[in-house]
Image (cartoon, rainbow, N blue to C red; front, side, top):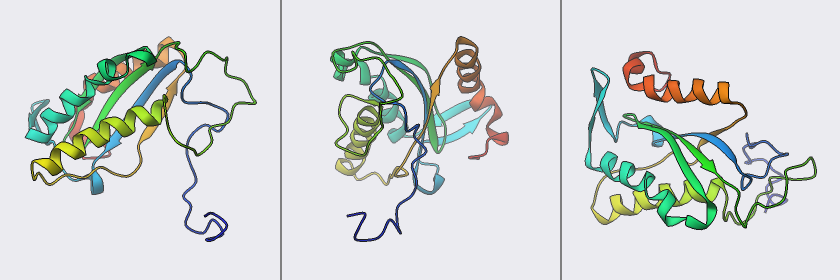
Amino acid sequence: MSELYNNKYRIPTVRLKSWNYSFEGFYFVTICTKNKKYYFGNIASGQLTSTEIANIAHAEWFKIQELRPDMNIELGEFVIMPNHIHGIIIIGRNDFNKSIPNAETKNQFSVQSKNLASIIGGFKGAVTSYARKNSIEFEWQSRYYEHIIRSETEYLKIRQYIIDNPFKWNEDSLF
């Protein structure tokens, strides 16, 4: 397919090419709504006044562990904002990531299974499915942001950022 369009319409990936996203690790993710629309509610005094779809997104996020027990997932800090979510997903050692990351490992475009993309895809799909079945206007942005957390200091900084995000909503780039 890429030959057909000579890569004209391909958006370059921001994923780390030398990393396999099924490997155990701590991942900070941000998932936005389409066109940054406020589907999840509004923030007042550091609290989200949640919509129905925000409540579903919250419930689906915390189902991630129970739906994928074979991936040894833990969930870190999480917050829903009016037009995006932030969360930390920890993928532990499991049968799908027993090899050790190295320079030969490539993050290739292929069927996404038992990795970060499959987790995010399942989450986004569940929320979207609920919205469609219940005639709720809702759409996700097609991509998501991820960052591999590489130290405890970085983890603590990102965790605090997530906690503080509702209180700093007026300063947020997604406001």
